[in-house]
Image 1: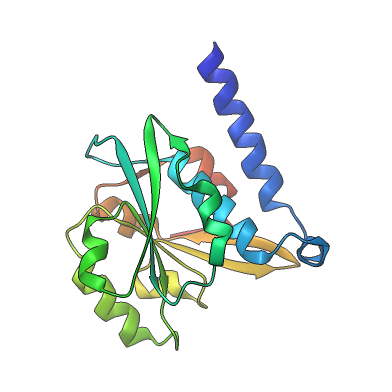
Image 2: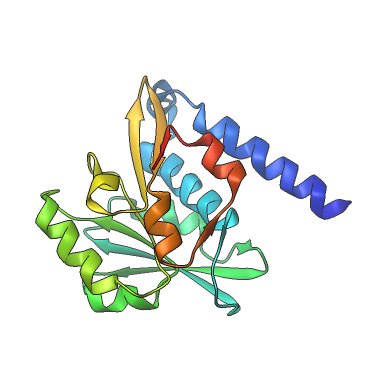
Length: 176
């Protein structure tokens, strides 16, 4: 019963966070604080084939989060302790569970090159560059109608043997 209540609470938090207007950014809650919360919830609602005790969340490229993403470091998600890692080496992200791809400029060939290096690994890819799910990134974050929203390339997630909860998929703006 307790686990079911926690799951309902987490779903409610996810729904509430997805409805936070961009105006809140001006009230000392930055865009990347909210996006860090989204990444935490992506971890909560995704299942990986490996069952290690650690869940690595990697930031690839220049870190747009600053210390905002550190708020999830050490938290537990589905019995795994989250560890935040920053890297500029694409080969390192093959060992991550979630990778935020901050590729500047956001050009298609750069994403395709990065995704090719990750191919075959069980890595949930996330980015906030425009239209990234079309490039093969699994989750694309964006600001729409003054709210943080996300799209899911479910086909790519399934190809990487990742199970994204139907609850999370229902909250997505678009799923393909």
